[in-house]
Length: 247
Image 1 (cartoon, rainbow, N blue to C red):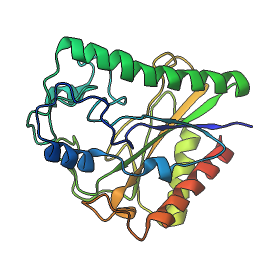
Image 2 (cartoon, one colour; image 1 turned 90 degrees about the vertical axis):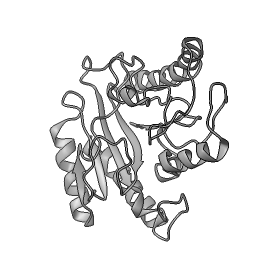
Image 3 (spheres, helix red, strand yellow; image 1 turned 180 degrees about the vertical axis):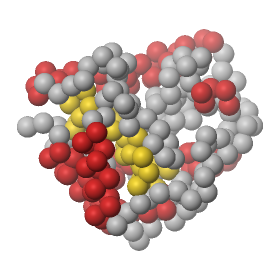
């Protein structure tokens, strides 16, 4: 039986090491509340699929960024694979070349290698695999968001021209339309993750990002679950079950 690869990169609040951090603990905690994709490990829970959950906070190491800062647009504001700045531009930590190299080796690539291994396993067993890149986003843009449009959709799918088939996009649009939710396509965030070994090289590796607007399940701007949490979780569960039938 085919299994989805559920990639969940931003649900953790854990900072494994405070080396280099210069900001006070309260400010760091507030940034964690602001930037964490809260409870996506719960929203995208599945007993039958393969889950790759990053066990550390994105403000420690963001595995969704390109490793090379020259390729990563967010590195221009100090929010590349190894964050150096808060969303407001203040200094978060001082990152030496040695510290960066250690984080990339021990955390970034450890995560990506585990991700790659699971994709390889599914390819070997099923001759294809479908990655769901699992995220949430605030209903109001943060300062560093590239898209500052004030009104945001309930859900968003991020796509890749090579790895996201058109029939999958069409099916996703129909699914959320039937449920009565608004859906962005590459809006407010774009793209979806694929292991670099297969990126733009293997058509049997499919990928699509699903993002949930936090207004649907949190009492924003806090990280407190709202009364709609379970309802939203069921929508996500339904989406995962639906998408298996499509592919």
